[in-house]
Length: 326
Image (cartoon, rainbow, N blue to C red; front, top):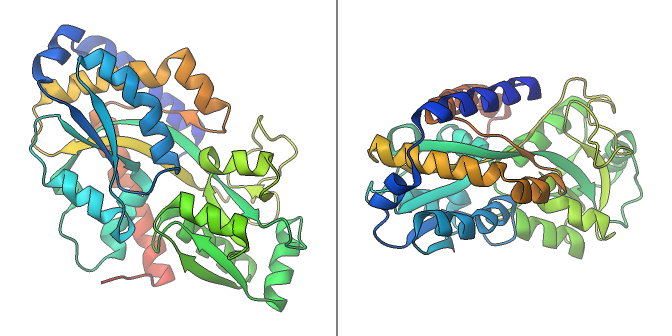
């Protein structure tokens, strides 16, 4: 995984390029001739959904058109992604999703109705949120070693947002590194995985901090560790997974916006300019930071480079874990 310093460099580079190529607002408005859809390929309540709803109104004001969020869950996010891939390349249909999960898709599925690299084009990254490893409050473990020891005595249900998702593969990596024993229970998205862990149907969960932290703060879930290279300022007493024995371990969710391939460059640049401005605004940044997410923006070219790097990295993990779906 890229270091956070690298991410910040990407964000800084994005800002420099943005200053030279961003289209003025008048140009942005020239192509937006009807309502704009932001398709989130997961159920409401997850990290992507939270961010989509946070940016929809400011984007609507910038474009002078209604911007609405459409949750189109199914097939581990592939249903909504396919809908965007097959939409007209005119900037009126956007995909907001976990880019890391999208990079994994091609390695996990033997058959896909779309090719993420061929059929979609990145606009910008928006935010990064490390995974939190949490358990139901009734689980008698407060550290990762205690949780691993418990799992060897009692098989624990491990809720995953989807088979082959970044949280799933992060769970597999921890399991392989520690000798833990999880029973993976797949869901259609992070919000459903969270609710079943809160309800006790699952005992263990890894999910993006943005959507998970509020439930830890309310006492509905108990935090074990965070999957960042260093402790979070927001949760200074919560150790990292690396501290607890899986040295160097880091994982998380990357929310970004894509559009159908072939969308005219001027529209992509105009959307990049507005989305970067919105996500970096003090109000939006404060909301995200307050829930454990970090604002990370990129140019379209940087986005493509990141996606290709992630696709290569996760392909190795998928091959080692033997995760394949038809």
